[in-house]
Amino acid sequence: NVPNVTIVPTREDGMTTACYSPVDCTIKVVGGNRATFDICRSIAHELVHQMQDENGDELDGETGSPCEDEANALAGRLIRMYGSENASFYEE
Image (cartoon, rainbow, N blue to C red):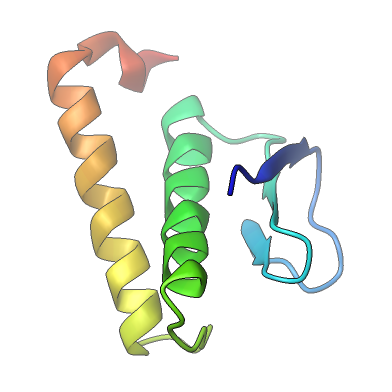
């Protein structure tokens, strides 16, 4: 499924810097006062949660849980790979 990604200016209820809703396949990301690469990392993190949901994994948002650790690791890896090929990405 292709999620609906919305960038909002500030946090909304139940958000840290981003959130994924398995109910309606939506991603919301805080964009205000954040670097472009950080916004992209948050989107990548939430896309990993969507993949986990589609694979039938239990989504557990607790720090240190397997699904959070996987989302953090894969999102960080994707951003670093993109940044290594596009150095100006970190300047935006």
